[in-house]
Amino acid sequence: MYSPSTYPVADAHVDILYRLYGGEDPADLMASREHLETGNVRILTCAVYVPEEKVAEDPWASALAMIDLFYERVLGNGILLTNLKQLEAFEAERKNRANAPNITNGTHASPRRAFVLSLEGMEAIGHSLMRLRILNRLGVRLAGLTHNPANAVADGVGEPRGGGLTQFGEAIVEEMIRIGMGIDVAHLSERAFWQVMEQDPRPMLASHVASRRVHDHRRNLYDEQIQALIAKNGWIGLTFVPSFISDERPVRLTHLLRHLEHLLSLGGEDTVGIGSDFDGIETTIEGLTHSGDFVTLRETLLQLYPASLVQKILYDNFIQFLRRLWSDRTPVGSGATDA
Ligand SMILES: [Zn+2]
Image (tube, rainbow, N blue to C red; front, side, top):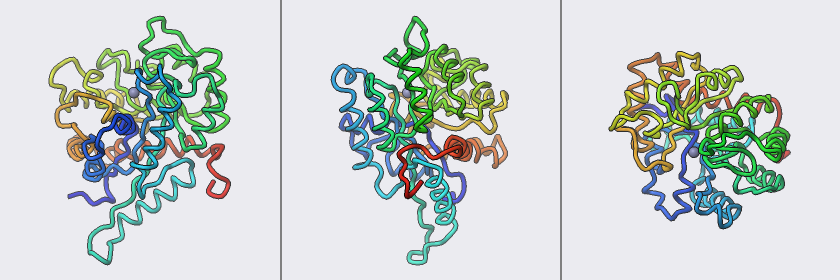
């Protein structure tokens, strides 16, 4: 019903690695290969999230196991994006494949899928900059400093004292700037958010959040934070986590659209996108239960907004963010030959 050349989707936050690590069957994922194909999700950011119960054990081993699962079970014939050159090559190939009919079977060849790896919380690295660099070498190009609890780097939104970056946290941010790893501010305490904004001159992203003005949830962003991300040419992924979106039940697409409308009203036309949190959630927004439901979201958005804006929200804004993040220089460790 949709040509693969139109309305690709970039989803900047799914927890499939966490699910696979927990033993889930790949076919049962909300972001299963089949659902991703139906929803035309062409770029998928996979979080490396060490669950709280595993932090007490060996979070470094857990993170490495999830990265191994990514390479063994998820990547397939896809491409892991680690630098600008790869991104441009992927985009060129995607457009090409989408437009060129496959001669052998007369149908459109499905474009490949690209992935981004993102560490969610620094628990895995403990107090080690070396581990951060190793993750970078393994292809992890984005990272959030915390999940909800505090850690050695900073306080997350779940830490009542509301502290900011630790001294080690400042060293982490410096190292991330040096090696070219982008910062995801999604779970950070407000204080740490502003400190990171101050310390890191690069564009940054909030991968899976919503508007605190629309719904007062600790994981949502205040207007000032949203405006700061916009001003810094960053990116904001609107999430489908029901509790972030509304207290009403069921949470419906119309509730989600209020957040989108608010983000756009703040000037987010080139900043807002999607970070679904599929496979990281137990309940879902009505009609947005898996990646295949991006079809529904797309149809709804097309009734409300011009096609060009829908394309920006669903895909282009995230690509443009990665371009801005990666354009100033090639990240350390992305390989001299394909840098
Ligand atoms: Zn999260």
